[in-house]
Image 1 (tube, rainbow, N blue to C red):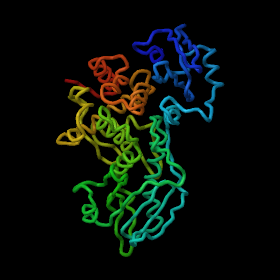
Image 2: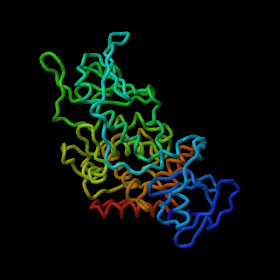
Image 3: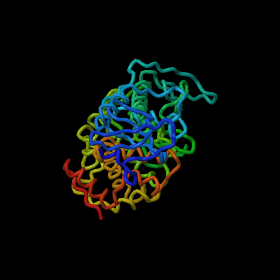
Image 4: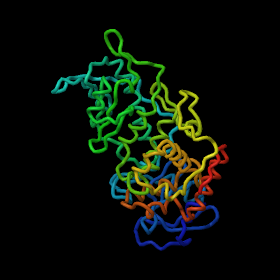
Amino acid sequence: MKNLLVAGVSLLICCDYALARTWTDVKGRSLEAEIVGKSDQTVDLKLSSGKTVTIKTATLSQKDREFVANWAPKTADKDALGGDIERYFSSEWPRLISADVGMEIDESRGDEGEFIYTSPHYEFISNAELSKSVVKRFALLFEATYLYVKALPLGNSKAHVASGQRYKIYLFEKMEQYYRAGGPVGSAGVFMGGKEIIMVPFRSLGLIKGSSSWRVDYDRTNKTLPHEITHQITDREYYAQGARGWYTEGLAEYVAATPYRSGKFSVNAADRAIEQYVTGFSRSDNRGRNLGTDIKAPDLKQFMDQSYASFTGGNGNYNYGFSALLVTYFCHYDGDEDAANLKNFLRALKAGKKGAEAQKELLAGRSWDELEAEISKGWSRRGVKIEFK
């Protein structure tokens, strides 16, 4: 019961908070903690230190499993982080994400003559007119990506927007218009963090100009858009030092490499697709980071702590690809393969911790050398050799 016995915590902890109870696992070990959340297979326990850990319900005693089955959070309760965020960590990992293919697209004109199209969670502001059917085609990708990030049990509250609120996407008919607005030269789309907007040229939406209107090139695929959409709905706390770069870009790569077609993300095939995308080229679109299956990796702590300018600099292709492998490892292969250590790391970021203080949760009592060895072992089982310096 690896996650119940946290490094540095004794088998029986005395707590003075009223909602704590004694939890016992199938081996007879126990601790005092308060239940703050649950999913079909896991339970989230708050320790007296304020730390929250996620453990598998099946490892608990029969009495405790019955308690979890009958437990429900009070509607007025707030989680350990001072808000309603804990419930965003407790859902099951999604298998299939599907956007509503029957959704309606509304259209209007802006004060400066721009064309405005709205879907359930997005407002597309275009400098050229598009048909509703064309907008609906690419809006499905935006809506599906939103639902995907929202469904991931990684505590991302920004993806849970209030009803009626929409993310803004600016569309540009010509590349020179996109560049004049601040789009990086050579880019296919960009998230502008200061303005909380995404800017996209038409060609990145797979749009082709016909004789009288724009149409969709159904043979084109685009991994840039899900990547940037993920950035737009990733919580600011996750960009803190020690997480920015490797986690934020790795998560965006994870989402972008997940197989997508016609409003559906096949999340159950994500880890295999990410491996193909990072080590070679995706079978579906022949795009990828092409790092190979024999990877020379830098010192892990230095990689996680590097500045964002360094991350996106001269070795950007490698950094993005390797980060996707790291995020995939922590989501699916680390510890009990339940992302518990990653969730605790993200909880720490939510609590205002950063750098080494937050990374202690990823280490989970391991040294950096031990964590590097476990990452190498986890990926070697899947045919990818990673050798750290």
